[in-house]
Image 1 (cartoon, rainbow, N blue to C red):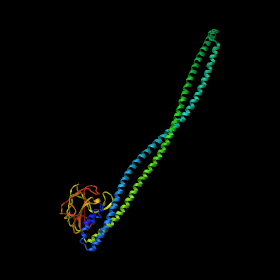
Image 2: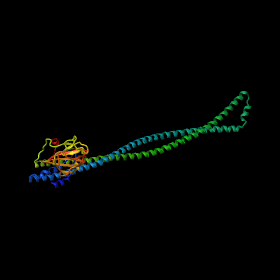
Image 3: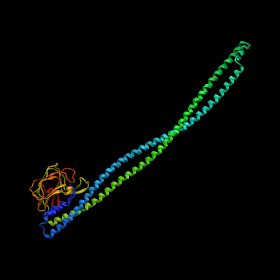
Image 4: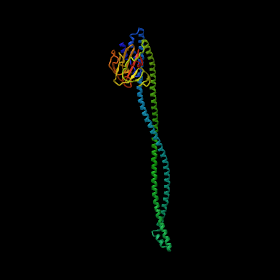
Length: 416
């Protein structure tokens, strides 16, 4: 029996809420020795079969854990992809706004260039008109200057002295005075027209420089616009690629997990069949009537039977009950018996199994420590371990199972 137990230590188990197919092998060992040879051979074969099922089951569970680990990495990658996507979307929106602003500015520049060209044409026409007036006034002033020169410096005075009457004198005086005023106005007009020509030429030059600057800016804006549109196309392509990677990663993991869970379900069915055969082979039946003591003080936080697994979030069979108790709380033997196993069982963490005789055994899992060893006799209610959170668990508690001939049964009818 000890050799078989030693071998069983290498078999892994699932903890809180998981499967415990291989635990049945350990719990029925004490019943095999007293069976007839044929029944014993049959039970031994069932043991081997159940051991293989348990090993396969654990392998599938480990693969699910690995898939979850990979999924965690992928989820982190997806989070990074989402962050990148958000950044790219922000960049696309920014580029869209920039492109819109550039389009508006280019359109405004084109309109301003058209207006500037029209204004330049008007300024040029005005300049030509001013130049014509200046030329006319300049010619008139030159003619007056020539006439005055030919008449001599005393011409006006001689003309006044040769007047025949006072009225004639006044008429000649008025004429010369008007001529002098006209000459002064002509000189002022010529100067004003020359100033207007310079002003108009400066305005035309400024307008030309403005047009050149607007054309240069327009060319720069068009080049920037083309670059931003290219960046936007590239960003949209990256965004599409990121979304595709995210969907592919999630779909790949979910498909893998679905396939693994199908294999687990098949193993569960086979394990249940083996447990039934073991019960029939050993000839034991369940008993109740409050035979066992409560192994720990606390409420039942998860009952026996089907439930949603707290870690995998799938509907799975829970082969025992969970008793809520603080970390380090005392765990007591539910009844007198012999410690058949004290060690680690994968998902169960630290485990104790006690054989109470007659095919009845109890299992205590997720322990932080135990104070008994294999082969030791323990009394009813004796302290055997402490509550912990080893194996697969979400918080400190005691996972407690009752098994009849290796098959898990509801512990509640057994507890006083």
